[in-house]
Length: 201
Length: 201
DNA sequence: TTTTTTACTGAACATTGATCATTTTGTCAA
DNA sequence: TTGACAAAATGATCAATGTTCAGTAAAAAA
Image (cartoon, rainbow over all chains, first blue to last red; front, side):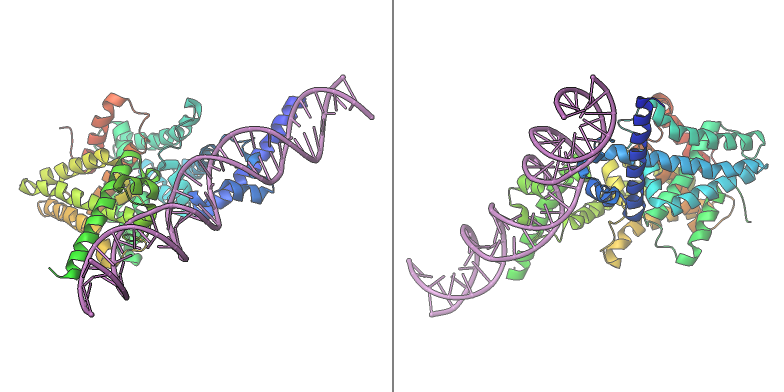
């Protein structure tokens, strides 16, 4: 192993430790709970050290965001085995909402943080795009199967994604708190079913 | 005019000045651009003075949020004159998106800020609810007219709201930037039309 | 061992929201 | 007009933030 490679691996280890600590702080208390000093304390280094491995705090948050997408994609991979297109899309929606509610902070970072992709290259920016493409494939399968009356794949995919994202966002941000607690899950489920043009169930 | 009343009016004036300054700072540069010192400088008072009229920064942001809803409701009042239910709902959606894109920061405060209603009483919390009820009325008119196959008003209203909110949020947060700039508006419009079960146009 | 490169430190800086003893301003009775 | 009280406003101060950088310690190379 060359010197350069070892250095890289060690640096990678350091980055991992920092990201791990940052993730713990983030999922526990959100953005403002992640402070350079707290990260430093967790990994038992001084605050300045972090800046040897990351440009700034935003850089760290961006990496957490990518980790979120990795988990998200892994989550969605379980759908592949479902043959029926509409059932697959429907399950995808349920997974989407479940992921958002189980990882509200991460979800926000991935889909509702404005400046997160500001300084990232086109390569990294395509990570979220990959997730959308996958989703769009499922939509296409439904269109091909004639589940929806015809329309463009992209438009339909965006409409459904927007509904899911809207529901997730409103739920997370407490904007549906006026609904009775016990009927919340049902209403959300039915709302998504409405967008899928499903009836009754 | 009693002493007490005059005091109240003067205090109200002071509150207005503070809120006006805060709003200017907010719409220009978002949450982090609103600082107590900047507000103080704008109104030519010392930072400490602001705390005589508002409990803390969150209190100020909450009031800005309510101002946002006032503007929003005024915006939506223009719909009343449209007789056709579906056309009214459709126009309401366009208004909704237009408002969100014209006031992205305010929109975020109103619909996508987590802790904003934390310390507010049930009275104040009902302000956003009023907006939803109004929207739900339009949905009910559509259901009564048989525009959608039957379903509960609340569920349908939430599904449509979620779609609008999702589109607004994704647009504002730049998550639809992968679409070509020139087709963006069209795609968004069609996506909402899809949720409304409109075809072609 | 000496020199050079690398890794790390932690004090310091500018800002932030918030507090509070002090001072200024305003009001009214004597 | 003066004196006394109340209200309003100040601004120094606090703890915490992200970030920087001269300096130190450790490791590697010579």
